[in-house]
Length: 250
Length: 348
Ligand SMILES: Nc1ncnc2c1ncn2[C@@H]1O[C@H](COP(=O)(O)OP(=O)(O)OP(=O)(O)O)[C@@H](O)[C@H]1O
Ligand SMILES: [Mg+2]
Image 1: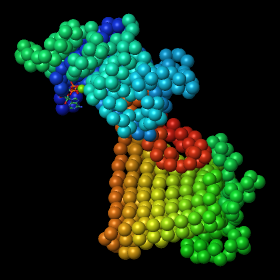
Image 2 (image 1 turned 180 degrees about the vertical axis):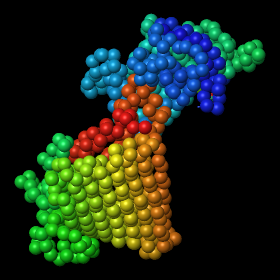
Image 3 (image 1 turned 90 degrees about the vertical axis):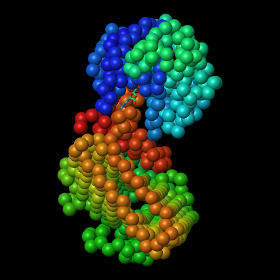
Image 4 (image 1 turned 90 degrees about the horizontal axis):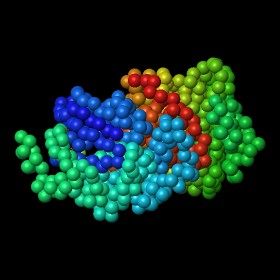
């Protein structure tokens, strides 16, 4: 489904944030990415979603056999890629319900599928809200505007559930969530689990992985994946931190 | 333009400066007539108001709107000014609006035109708000591309009166609106908003002066502009606090979106204060569409042009949202139509 090879990424002022990433995600798999602050996890997520402030100096990314890096962000979404942002932006003046409906209908239109009308969409989205234990009042507010940190994260998951992507990247969606919210979010993710759907879950906490059980855990440090393993690796990291890995590498 | 029909079915119409009394009903209790008739029916009021603003031009055309004391009406009064192949020398309108004590009214004035000749719509509007009156006043200038729109608006507010003004400008080749608002009685309140949405080679200019002459008055100016292509939008906001204007509160805010490097936005706040006891604030910003917001929308599958349009609507949102639903339903389609011209990514 996703194949990243030798990806090198920089920005103005920091030429090598990612220094040769290799990662393959097959349909149905859940990959967790862990790693120290500033190691490049969000950079990787953003580059996959199509943010254009980065310079890609080498490498390729294949998504369902197409060259992901040549697509616009909206084309990537249409192909089924979704990023839950670490820091979701606020859109004052943009109604959340309208936003969700525009997003889903844009994607459906581009895929040649029938668009939802207002009533059907309302019913559809209300069911998703229930699964996430979110209040319907969120639909009538401006997107993320004045939302608490945890509410923003839930709103990201709501968008994911509405858009039903093939590959969802969750960038620290668990940070700042209370225990109940964490469970609701995990429930949302698990409800989407499907042999044809994959997830990349970026997290700092092993706890999340009790709820969303990964097939693989990767450690990203200094722009490289320095270790990969099964879900036990997360437990080991929780216990020992990253020091031993980084030192080992050097 | 078909969009006007939404308004014309519900509004009083003034064509080339001439008032056509509607067969449709006006809100009850409200007096509206042309200026000539008003000279006969309300000679004292008319003469007194006219004396406050001398104009040497031909001032035959115009409206007189008289809102009696204690009149409260929910239904807005809609006035549609239309230029239909008007004379070369232009249309000149002189309007007088009087709001009686404790009255509460909403008025929309909408300006449009048609035909191939360049024309000018000139107007002088004088408003008098008596004690405890409340007027919600919305303007929408949507003239033809060839037109010049020149407006002089003079407002005098008595004690405890409240004036809410929201002015949208989407049309005309050039427009100049000069607002002078005088807060003459204590605790008079004024909220003055403006929004220029201009592209091509349009020019929009708002010049606002608020005089604080009595104690404990409040004013707030909130001006916004979106300029694309080679358009130019200017806002000058001035607050003058006289020595009698103790405990004045005056705010000014100007936020602007520049959609093309050839467009220009100029904003100048000015303060003139002759007393110590004042609370004033002003702020201004000029920026482009936020790239992070744009990326967020695109990452959800929304095409670039539509994403831009959503953000433009969001920018206009608070001004539009502040007017009543009746009025929103008439002007929103026109504003949406203008915004859709500006998000097509043809500039830059
Ligand atoms: N636009 C930018 N300009 C300069 N430096 C940047 C930019 N974007 C990212 N960086 C730098 O690249 C590095 C990787 O950042 P990134 O956000 O990917 O880290 P992260 O692994 O997600 O960290 P965290 O766990 O704190 O979220 C950091 O050192 C960051 O400061
Ligand atoms: Mg990060």
